Structures are given as C-alpha cells and as structure tokens.
Length: 516
Image (tube, rainbow, N blue to C red; front, side):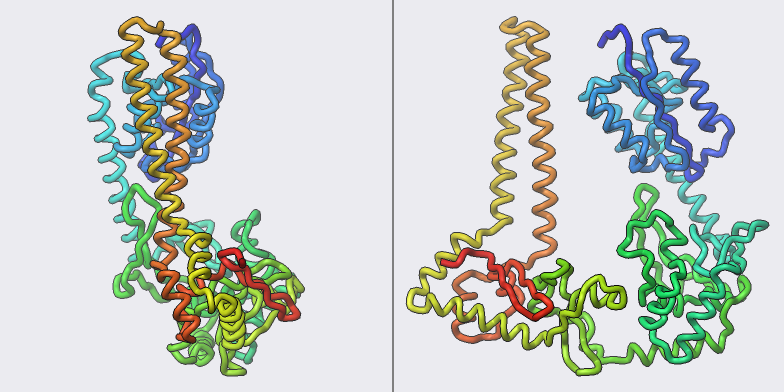
C-alpha cells in the first residue's frame, strides 16, 4: 500500500509482571524512541498515543489497546508503531493473529522499530518475526514461573503478598510485605467481635454499623464501587471478618493461583498446601475471643445438611412485583418451613428498599399447581388442542438459534464465493481495480457483520446448553399434570415464563404460551 501520509497510533506498554524493569523500557524512553522515528519519516503523522502502564503482555485485555482497536474499526488510524514486538504483546498466538490477520484485514501498517519490522515492506526481519514472537512468549512464560516462585518463597517466609490488606490492617510503610494495625478501622473489627460474642447476630451487627454510617470495606477498598448498595453493611461482610484468622496474627496465603500465565482465571489450592504462618503480625483479636466466635458461628450454622443446596421447582421463576427483584427461597428456622421473600427486602429490610413479601413456599407451589391444572382442565375434552398450543407456541429457542446459525453459515459461503468471483473478474479485466476494491470491501463488511451475529448466537446457544436441562415432551407434561403426578422443575420451566407476587400476596402467572 502506498499512502502520502499515514495516520499513526503510538502504542506503548510497560509491565513489571513481564520483567520490564529496565530503564530502556520506561514509558518516557519508549515515547522518545517512537517520536524520533516519526521525525525521521515525513510520511508518518501521529494521531494519538495509547499507553498501557502496568499491563501484562500475556493477554490483550488492556484498556488503551482496546481503545486502539476501536479507533482502527472507526478508521481513525491506519498505522500502528511500537518500540518492538514485545510491546504489542508476548502471547505468541494472539500477537501473531493481530499482526498477520487483523492488521492486514483492516489495511493497517504495523511497525516494530527495534525489530526492523514493517508489514508494508518485505525484509529478512519480517521472515524472522514468528521466531521473535515465539521467543517473546517463552520469555513471558519464564518470567511468570520466576514471579510465581518468588511470591511462593515470600509467602512461606511469612511475607504478606496480597493486593489489598484485610479490613483493619494496612501495609507497613517501611516494609510493604508486613501488615500493621490500621488505627481507623481496627476498632471496628474489635467491635464486631465484641458484639458477636455478646449475642448479636451478624445481621444485627450489620444493621448497627449501617445506621451509624460507618464506611464498609467495599467503600474503603473501591470508592467508586458499583456494587449493590455498597454503603450498607451486609451479614456476609460481617461473617467474612469473623472467620478471618488474619485478626489473630496469622497469615493464610497461597489458597489459589492462576491457571497459567495467559489467563487471570484461578484454581483452588488444597488446604494442606496453603502457606500458613502464625504470629506474622500484631493481632487485633485475642485467640480466646476468636475461638469463642467460631464456636458461636458453628452453632448458628448447625441446621440440617439436607436443607442445603436444595433445588426447588419454582426457583428462578418468582419475582417481586413491586421492585422487580427475584424472590429467594430459604428455610425459616423459627417456623420450621421453607419460605419465600423479596430479595431486596431480605437483604435490606431496615432501609425501606422494599416491603416484606413473605410466603410459605409449599403453599405457593400448591396454588401455582392448582392454577395450572385449572388452566389445563379447560382443555380436558380436547387434550390434543392443548398439546398443539404448547407444541406450536412454546417453541424450542435452542432450535431457533441453530436454524439462524445455519442460515448465517450459508450466507457467508455465498459471500465468499462472491469474493472469489470478483477476483476472477478483476483478473480477466471485467472490472477495474478500483471497482474491485470497492465491491470486495462491501462484501467483506457484510461477512464481518455476519460473523459478529454468529458469535452472539453461539454465545446464546452455549448459555442455553449450560443453563437448561433437556425438557420433557409436551405430551408427558400434560399427562403428568392431568394425572396429578408430582410436578418437576422441568415441567414448570416448560409452562411458566415468570411469576409475580405483590405485597398483598396477589399472584400473577405469565405462561410461556398464549391462552386460547
């Protein structure tokens, strides 16, 4: 490609994770090197600078790089320049994909100054590029191993290596791997333990702290938190503090680790492999108080194991009509029964976000079953009509997605054949080069849009496969209801879309088919 002037994006990246601790890799030095290169080439005009400071080259989940890609899509730039290949990325596969596929497809010229790479100029350096990418990937892998090994050694020696100190502590300004008591938040921790051993529940403690407007750990940790009511103390936060051994001076680390250097996903480490160091820092809570709190917690959680992880037929189908929140199912220990209530009320009952929608779950299921049977009984004499309603109108959404994917695949095949035909027409002189480029670009954009639709549909299909069990046939569902057999969750999912309950306990059922 020959342009009078290229619209240039300067991309700069620095990461201590990658071992980029040399002065030559600094943001300032990278910028100066790139600007000097621009000055020596009068066909290059800088449009914008994209800097990712502190982001690993092992993946491309970086804010400035994402902005760079967006500007490429919007055709603001047509040239990307980095100091070397490793600044673009260290992942062999992904970096190669951008250089060899994405950039060419978007007509982007890519230059890596120190590696003498220019994708619009054939050179021996370009031939060596795959080897350089492989070396960068191996370097990132090696650095990852060294970092893991160093961190593990620090943890085993009693050094704190967490990102954010636990509530009640802060980093020692003289030693970042040592925790010291935070005079502002440690008294709150002491008070939580004191109230708990006096008999207050975690919910009651949360209510007291919220009413006194004491900042929550979430607000102190991330002041711009977008969490659900971060200003409100929750019983889960109280319980997390009550069970944390950090408060008696112990460090429990290496409880999880990343799967590999290319992903942020983590795996759980078996407890026998944890790094546990006692008396690693000054305790906020004495051992006796902590032990007493654990005994109280154990008794508070001492309810039938059969009540845990129970799957209820109406789970996920019932919503609060007044605030829209989901109605959650829980075991009411006082009444010894399963109940439902608005999730917003259950979590924030003291703050008037919503009102109580308490209902006996078993009675609610009976009412729903009765209403469904009454509906079906309208068609007892013409059962086949009811089957037809469900078969025709409660369609299989997964089947619809598969059908759309097949249609998209066929369209893409047609468009690719069209691209081949355009190339033949250009080669035979039927159309000129400019007409070819114009038509080819239009077809390519159509294919790109179809690929995006295909990607969304595949995600939708995968979500359906993960979240929904294989449904029973409509005939069996109808027969089971009419014969008064025990209804299953799959039967409810087949017939019901959503159930809404208001504070007067009025029930509205929205079916997944139209009533005839």
